[in-house]
Length: 425
Length: 146
Image (cartoon, rainbow over all chains, first blue to last red; front, side):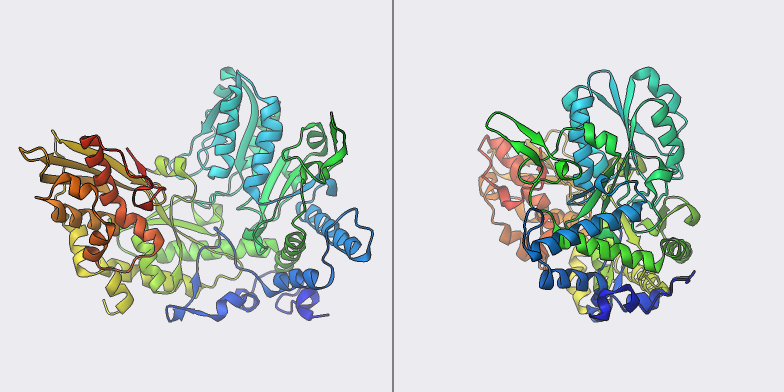
């Protein structure tokens, strides 16, 4: 067996390690072996998607090379191996989320699809006139547009929880909402992809349940960076994307409480999700199959489980601490750049994301000039147009960090920003 | 600037047009006008055109808006290119003509920035003349034009 596919092969992290060694972890990521425009690659766009470690890539390769066939119902050895690999991955993600049962773990394409699943399969059937769906101004479009669409279709109303001037949720208006309608859904992210704000959702979850509402948690930006425990969070649904946490693109997880999932109609229908099909009537399969129509993303599930192994071995607490350190370092260094405006909360209340603007220079020009310096950042509205409107900007620059990010990359960013200012001086 | 790639992209002339845009402003009684947006990056351009007494010659063009250097500089250059030309000719103008004037290599994403002004101008002219918008105007279906 190749050492690369076992956690024992991860020599860079010892189980007892408290502090993360980003320099050692970085060597697990082949992408950093190249230069960009003749400069070392400073990849500061992990909030959009993370890079991939060899261990995860090798796990997918090994599955394709040794165990690949379509899952379920196959009676031959390969089909059994593939089925076992898929279900082992489901169990791995159950453990990753500390979910009560593996059948509550639904494989989807990404967090967006998971959130749409809830909006359609729960919202379409349970919302009506006089009902309220409550989301926040900080939401990614993925936890905003599905609710806006489904609420509109069912005659329910969408309400936005505002931000205060520090980019943190302002919950002072909560008491007013129950007088305006029946609160049925509260949907919020745990970590904002645009500002990095870590939202204190405990109070929102408790409030949602007092109203008899379900709480839908977008954990796409949280899953790569902090330990998740759906039982401690006490949420009803939680969605994440594999590609942001060192996993492959094309797979994510929707976790939901079994009793809610069981009472719901399906989202997508077709093969595999059925109990029995007759000319006049079809019955649905058991969980999780009811929500997994069509051939499953098998190799992607294997990759996702390997990614969970990888980030767990690095240690989610250590990752979180590493990112707080980098955010504090970045906020300090960026403040040296004349004409910079920084958005969002202080370092201790944010994940490794820093949003900023340079006075008089459009983010696309900033990002383009930085690219020529080997620095990759994101420029735009980050799928958060309601938030951008709240900040009064069309777009921002966003630098984001992960377990492989080193301070030199932030230095390279700061030097690049000085170069940007020189071009526009 | 010493980096040749940087130099070719942010040519002095682009930065000059960005910092000192020509034809910047609003024409209150414009004969033709339109607004364009590039939702991808939030570039916005409004274009105003005044025709000469023949109702065909472009006498004056002004634009307002905000956005990246490429979008604003390209629109500024455009206002210098179309003065005195006929509206129906400009409504059919080949995008290559503008791209040659801009004279920098553009990735597909930045091409949308560069074309925002021209596409918006074409919409304004077609609206004023009552001619139908060509299908897939400049192949930039992500732009929002009103």
